[in-house]
Amino acid sequence: MTGKFERGILFAAGGLVAGLVGLAVMEPPRSETGIPKAVLEYPETDFETAAGPALPAGLVQVKAAGTAAESLVGGVDVRALDRGHRAVTLHTAEALAKTFRRMGYDLDGVKTGGAQVPRLFLASLPTDLDKVREAKQRKAIFFKSVLPLVLQVNDEIRADRRRLWDLSARVKKGEHLPAVDRLWLIVMAERYKVKRGNLGELMRRVDVVPPSMALAQAAEESGWGTSRFSREGNAIFGEWTFSSAEGLVPRKREAGKIHRVRAFKSLLHSVRAYARNLNTHRAYRGFRKMRQEMRRGGQDLRGAKLIETLTSYSERGGDYVKTLRSIMVVNKLSRLDGARLIRRMTADRPLI
Image 1 (cartoon, helix red, strand yellow):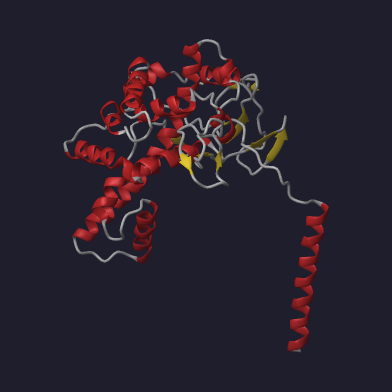
Image 2 (cartoon, rainbow, N blue to C red):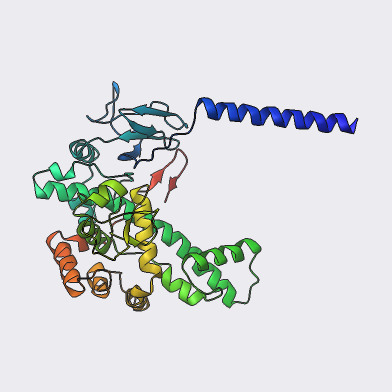
């Protein structure tokens, strides 16, 4: 009896394997890879009219909002992101600019503190930003595209920092932490390259990056979103890598150099890596020390002050810092250090 049962299981498993092999032969996986096009998330109620949704020109809507529905339109993968939201594709800088205007996304309003930043997360920048002739408009599109991503990453860091602060306080009281919290601390220590148990150093590293500083560096490192690295690899912070499988080779790389510019599958991944770099690399210990001193003094974190510690970010050293300061002053980026993402709403309650 047992032998028949075991043979039945083996027969069923063999049939399943044979079926999978046959499917792989008939429809082999695609070998090519590619960088995702610009994808924008916005609330379902945006652009609604009495006659129904009226999407801006250049946008493609997934009708099955809130599901896992996918479609391929114009060579671009369009996905429904989550319940109550739709995903749209932005083919051009002009379409993106129109979308910003229709949604009332105005940087001047954000700078004065009278408006919050919409949750608009682009997977990649429009590839025709260099075709926008007016510099002011090109800069506005770039800043509006990158700012929500920076704020999202900062929100993720704040959530970790709050949990770390709570656990640190409990440890100081002599409490025994549950296994799940101890495991989380181990993961965070490895992520931020800190010795296990050194909660003080971990707290120093798990902290946000001022938006003004991040925007100025993204603008400088990516050529305002027009560089080859930003277009082909979503690399807007010019981070180097020495892995042959994870980066793009600079065309003017000096002989004997082996570095590449790190590529990312989305802009959000690029921003996360940038923040992690500043929070972990030994070259930015001065940045972390000054940030901690500002915290202890009860000061707001200001990029205009913290950029002084970034001389090691570029081979240009002090001149690089001067360029960042100029970008911040000319574009009044310091006023964005207090910017926050608009709260997400559900039918029952808001989500912070």
